[in-house]
Amino acid sequence: MTRPLASATPITPRALNRATLARQLLLARHRWSPLKALRHLMGLQAQAPEPPYLALLARLEGFEPAQLTRLLERTTVVRMAALRSTLHLIPADEALSLRGLLQPMMKRVLQASRGRLLDGLDLDVVAAAAQRLLRSQPLTHGQLGTALQRLWPERDADALATAARNLLPLAHLPPAGCWGCHARPQLEIHEAGAADHTLGVDALVLRYLQAFGPARPQDMALWCGLTQLGASFERLSPRLIRLVDEAGQEHFDLPRAPRPAPDTAAPPRLLGPWDALLLSYADRRRFLREVHRRSVFTNNGIVRPTAWVDGRVAGTWALLDGDKTARIEVSALEPLSQPDRSALTLEAQRLLHAVHPQKRHEIRIGRGDA
Image 1: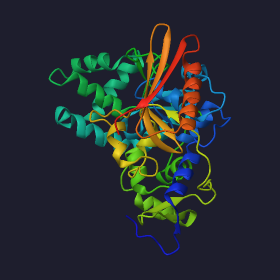
Image 2: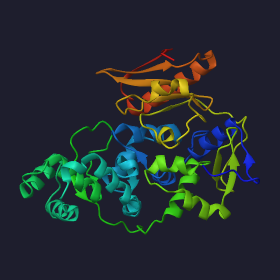
Image 3: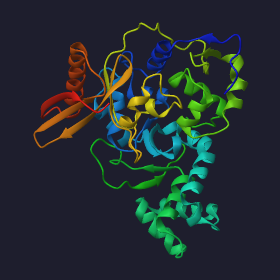
Image 4: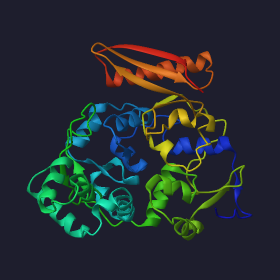
């Protein structure tokens, strides 16, 4: 950790919380286009089709799921492996620049997960072979692995396809990534967009702070998967301010970025699974009590949907979709006041109306395991 300078400004936990929520568009819904929000947030986690839609419903006023579906169908937004080597929705004209910057991390993750199965292979040759196959026609991950295995019969098909995934900018063709579509995605090589440009680490740091600050290099490393970011933060330090929290941890921030008053109201929100807000800080105490961590982060890598009250995680929730009825069940992790329960109920009604307008809606709020 960087030693806090004498010039660092103290920041309270609540002020740090409100600053974070302001950057994440969670203190008030914004009248932004989905594409503008995607740019600001540097993509949206898309391990499953639904989380990006839920992220925008929580953050944007007037957002309709069909808007994001149209962006995917027009390939204005693409779904591909990016931050942390996990699937994200990214503006198409920024996808190659971001992937290029993240490529060292993508190779490191590949080595950690499939290195033994790929040992001795020239991965550049594998990537070139995959590129030729995909320029001929789109293929699923399984089909690509099978085709590559014909060239390397002694190798594992899934490992070969994973090598292509991590070495090449492979986009999922719609309807993959659209709400409710869980079919195996067809893959194609994403071509450069008109606005694609070289993105440097320093530029990425500034954009990260705009959407996730105040933050530390350790936080950004968790967000994107890159390492050794401290040098970039220090290099940029003349353009940044330093804030020190009650634990003595130093946070960097942009001088003109919003840092609302600590008593600013934070309305209840329902965030979807794997929301980036929960995946972008090494120290999540600014919005999540440690006693609740295991209720949100499971042992098998799931990050549950979360219910937020007064800017903090207060519960988890699930969407149960029946033939005629759609129900949201909230499991509170701590006691909720009647006004908070009523506000969460309104938030749940809003969500159900957006994603299942034709069905009957039910909402249940109960006490979960703390």
